[in-house]
Amino acid sequence: MREMPLGRPDGLSSDPIAQLWHVPIRHAGGVTGPIRLDDRIARLPGPGGRRLAVRLTPDALRVARSGHPWVFDRSIRSVSTEGAAGDVAIVFDDRRNVAAVALWDPTSPIRLKIVHAGGPAVIDDAFWATRVSDALRRRDPFSSRPDASRLGYRLVNGENDGVPGLVVDRYAGVVVAKVYTPAIVPHLRPILEALVVQTECDAVVYRAGRNLAAAAAHGIADGDVVAGEPPPASVLFDEHGLTFGVDVRRGQKTGFFLDQRRTRASVGQLCSRAEVLDVFAASGGFSVHAAAGGARRVHSVDLSAPTLASAEVNMRRNASIHAVRRCTHTVEVGDAFAVLRRLGDDRERFDVVVVDPPSFATRQSQVDRAMAAYARLTRLALRTVRSGGLLVQASCSSRVPADAFYRGVTATADASDVRLVELERFGHDVDHPVTFPEGAYLKSGVWRVER
Image: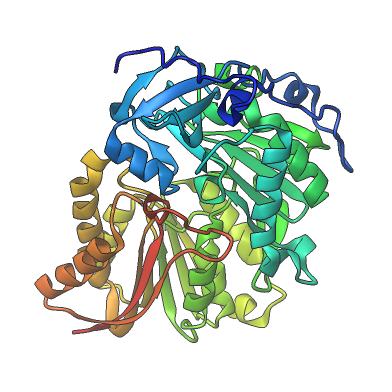
């Protein structure tokens, strides 16, 4: 990609494009809610005052105008000047009309994160406050409930809510903001200010994605509390009448996998008097729901001993429920593939087997390997399911299309001389909205196994 000056639009005094070019980025400054943001957030440098002028290939321009939030570096024909992460970039068409406004990310092949399509827009504090309020409005099914203050749910789902590279989850009174791109860091202060004011939370925790360089956050480290008092080591929240504890400062992702909420509840209702195997159990979401649903026995397997310890604690947290108290819960630290193979060799059989692995494909080049891994898991898991029992299998990779995943599961079963009867499919719950194709990553299925 060559850097080519686009030149400023003509008619600087009256042209709305020119006005957008010169309007300084506005900051409200000093906004506070029930709690106060850390001074380090206030000192985060904002985006540069100079806008980048960008032209795209015809195909990319059409996609950007449609509202798709990603533009790859190979689709950029020219850019007026070298930009820093988070600088505002204006996408022009060949007639010098504004087609979209984006955040510039020189660290990623997804060079532009589109935040507005279809004409000029000023990316200021008011813009981000509106984005936050729009996102919160979509979560009314949660926030309007009488027990809303005890729930765990997603507040902001990245690009799907028009806030690229930022995921925000709420666990009771604690808000956890996880940053995945340096392009959002210069805009983080007004976003967090809006969250503090609009959610009236007790604390805000900053989490950083693995690919985010420490320098990008200017001294704010993963797990730092950036508003309010430090939360307890385990923050308690409710999910479908069950209580879970989450380590919001050191746990995986933001601390818990909220996206499988609906699947967990539905699977739990299928576990009456069942023996259940929960593979990739993490902190026990499926395991606890299975016990509460009346399972006689639940065996939780995970490679991480600390997360399995959390699963045991979460099971004990719900011991006031008669079904949970009666359930026999065992745990096993080990590799899922190896444990499934051993259980199959030992002819151990379960009524319900849950296989909910991490993402096997973060890049397109890994999709074939991921599909092979899913097939191996299906083959191994089927050996442990009683005839008439249930297989629950999931994928959380956006690179793997849903149809390909479901076809892969059934094809593997056919090759193993096992008939699967599909009972239900699950995707994203209302707090994980999907507004562009690549935003749809979660797929889960429930099948009855007939030999």
